[in-house]
Amino acid sequence: GEDVEQSLFLSVREGDSSVINCTYTDSSSTYLYWYKQEPGAGLQLLTYIFSNMDMKQDQRLTVLLNKKDKHLSLRIADTQTGDSAIYFCAESDGNTGKLIFGQGTTLQVKP
Amino acid sequence: DAGVIQSPRHEVTEMGQEVTLRCKPISGHDYLFWYRQTMMRGLELLIYFNNNVPIDDSGMPEDRFSAKMPNASFSTLKIQPSEPRDSAVYFCASSQPPGDQPQHFGDGTRLSIL
Image: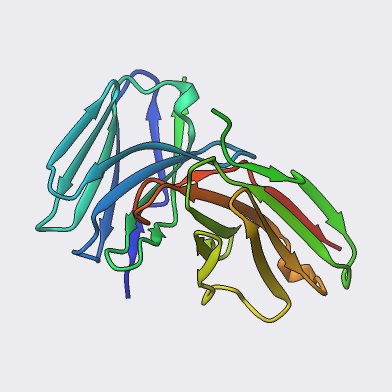
């Protein structure tokens, strides 16, 4: 079945770049997503990329997609303390449209 | 535009009681999803609806769980009887058609069963 894997924890210093990585298995996924979850809150859609794209940039966020290796990454430039949260990668099941989530990467930003 | 609205935000009840969670999707979104989040199992899809019709309920843990969508602007998730292991955060999400469009999440209901 489909599976999405992420590393569990990343710690960076304020001002540095953060790179959160994700691997997925469903090659028929139409879209791949990044969600952010702050403590006690719901999941906020950060950005998403269509499967026929290699890269998408949105202000401080850059998403890279390597479809051959089924690897997705999220780069956050000039990371701020407000970026501290859990980041979820998700792929859409190409047949049903259901989202398959990774286990989330906790990003800790040190001042 | 209002986002997905869930109520209540917090619910604490005793084991054996009936629990009803509510969700109002974003207007115009034909897909509605119910998720459960726990530390042990992460995010799990419980059930989803398209145009008020349940499409896939394979994630519903057992018969104690039921979900309805009587109209396009309202859905409920009911647990009867509740058990301590049902304690989790329950999220509702909605999306536009087709079904693989971005899902927008509510703030969740934090459920504690004592």
